[in-house]
Length: 388
Image (spheres, rainbow, N blue to C red):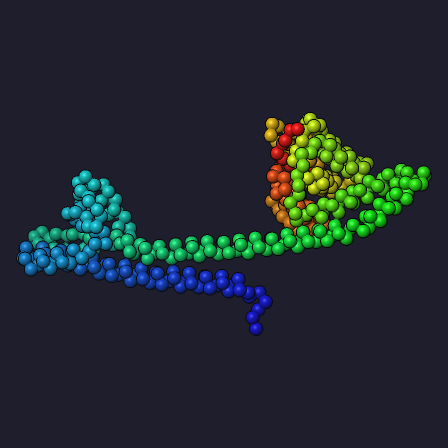
């Protein structure tokens, strides 16, 4: 029976790992075989040089050794004496001059020496002469050795693209699910909200219930607004040139009436009342409301919330700070992730949706400016300004 955790993705990953592993081992086997063949060829080269010296210029010896040496067109070789002085021209290393390029040749000798021991030739003479043959890896050997790394990079890139595509597809499916739930919630809220609006109208007919009807009407209107917001999730809203200051003031005033008497919500605005910004007011009000509500939760009924509105030549910024319990450093990078929450209640979608509304729908930015445990938190929204 196949375990539940085993699926086609794991199978593809295991197959890719097996292919790469097999390629690495086989390429290493080929590289070792080529390296052994190249050393054997350099040994043959050494014997050809020795034979040529011992034959003392015999024509047949010269022809034979020339045929052997001329076959080497890929292995770089440097011949030196025991003191490391080059003997003759380097082989397969381009046009080098033993005198003018002596420093470069010595550096290559040191490089070859680190790769492998030189092949030693002792010529029987008086006194005996020693020739050391230093040689490096041929281009073919390097290609065989580096091929698995290239293949590994290609397979890694393929796996990354595949996983990223699957993750994107999964997120898209999740977004569709959440959008569908939101629209269905908006649809289901329609009937009870309409009924509540009718009850409010009936209360308004009673002179003794005017104050109650007015307050209840505010909450019913807010409920209608929430329903409208849910209905717009999943579809890009139409932005309209809207005065930003009254929008912020309205949300702050609403939240003041629904917070503890021991919580002070302060608003400071340094912008012109007529400053307009491309907005979906319904959705943007929810963003501000959500941030203030989170700040209220962090205060536990006591403290202060500051909302400030500032503008530059082309930007508008709204900062919301509180004197609450703050956010742990380990959680600060995750607060905008869907489903992440430090609260015992809620789905952890508020900040995620707020960020999406600000950045994807309004082309702005929502970021956590600072937060310190026991001292409070500061968020900032930045929008593109448009003056009327």
